[in-house]
Length: 337
Figure 1: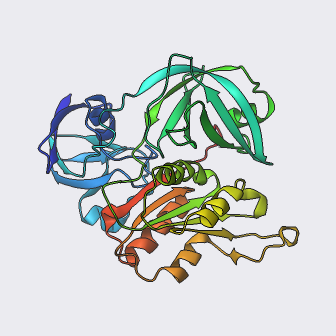
Figure 2: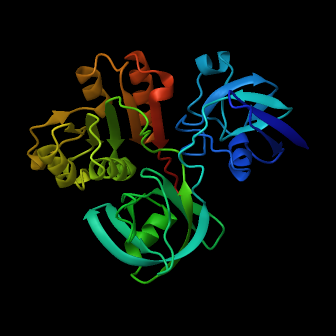
Figure 3: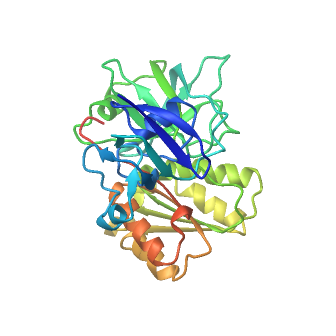
């Protein structure tokens, strides 16, 4: 059965089939709703159900009891069971970017840490992928499955598409990348995807929060902002287990040295004696709680493990951050990664 979906306040309308989520139907028909993980983990696609009925697939972790009492739904896993009206902000910056499926060649495999590889992909000579810094792409596997990775390079440096791939225990694809993949191998990709990118119409200071390879899209966003001489104050808090996990620490260190309005704070949760660490310790959200008693005038961009993104969102809202100024991309790791 087909239902109608109306978006407020824009008044845009589209149709939805029983077997697709509200987000899938919207994107299919050219309406750009905000989204990140597409599996209910990050909360980027959260909006309000004004009229009608929906049901969620799975157990969306980014929706709590308070959200349900306020008629909040997650568009990425919500299916319409009647005609519905939803309230959300539409993303205008991505509307003219075409999502495409393209072949590419593995150009380089560079180990950045014992469990992180920078995978550089080369598109055909006549092709370029237009994308916004912070978006991601899907690698399409031969068995029909797909793996999502953030694009780590900014758009102005797009000779190659660089992905930061962390080895996942029993992860079929990541183990292939680390043990079998070779330069010149051919892959198929689809992108760009996602709405995790800098809202450039704002002048608010920005707080970036990353854990692990969640640094990848944030690297793209900050590199883009600095390239275009944005003068907004920017703070990057990068949480990791130990020193080697800060696999490109020299990059934000250089940004801080060269840019007056940029501050970098690395935080280690499991620092070892061999790290000789004299910096901040504990969880990255604990450092932010200490340093930012009031976030009411900020924008926040968080990327990393779902637990961190959830904790960061809760903390930031408690510190006065407006809900629509929190942007997230949660990395959900599965054994099939």
